[in-house]
Image (cartoon, rainbow, N blue to C red; front, side, top):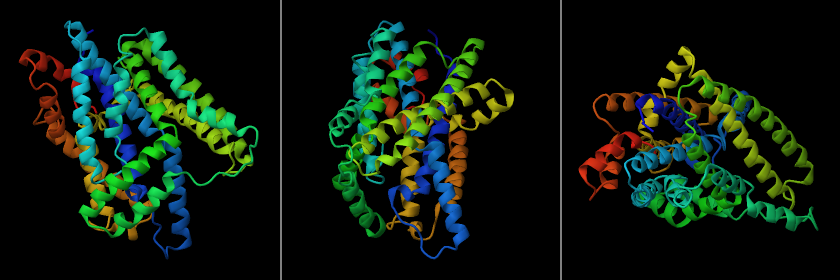
Length: 403
């Protein structure tokens, strides 16, 4: 199976789109620094609330899922390229994930919500399934999406569904984080992120099913790449149109059911795991709506041109992701400009759009002069350290810049 640059265009564009939407959400929430500037006029407060709700409806829980799906696609492209050459990519991939974990921990010094380190660990789930048949991998991924721990909580709540639950354990960690994010030095933020923020994020990821859904999405991405679903082909265009219709119908049903269980009480023992489970599935369905819509539009000249604006970011996603953490926290946190105290959701959205445009321009400028982004090039060199030059060079096309 040959890998050509055109075959990666849609993947790069989707990854870039996911990265931009993640950036917008991070800006709106001040990179997890919870604060609403006081004294805003009523119309501005109402507008900020509408922007917040709309942005999280469109991208909350969806952008990360698309990013994870593309991660699985890239794994398969790398794995398959080496497999065609008669080599097993899995040992090298394990080393590659150790490097990604290191990148993630450096990024965590600035932003505790970093996903790179988590991806690096959860991606190891791809190693035992890489050679399994499609049906077996699909079954494992679907089992993970059932969220076994949430199903257990639902069953445990049935004898007393109205039993009140305490606040999620992660909330206490995030509450403590506000203090050092708003008032601490960069050293305070780095220490707080590692000792308080990262445990809080891991707890939150467990509470919200991310530790099961992320490896499932990796596997779905791998299966999609196996089937060549991101190639430009008439059959794939029809496939994505069917996905768009089916996912749209599934989202409507899941969203309606989730809204209907609100009467159980937001702190009841049954509502919390049930709402989390339904929300996870609804987010997956809406992510597929976004992905399928973009894939369908990519077959039209106007849509292809729009998608092209996201591709440089997609090719430099590791550099772009780390850069947005450093720049974003520098803008909003107390160790930097401290803009959290003066910006509502509307102003943050405008800042996020400006940063996305600048990052896209920088990525395009850089890639006109270099084959990879700066962190991608470093990651590539370290990945293939000790390997034969021929083997390392043949892997470059499949790697690109895709954490």
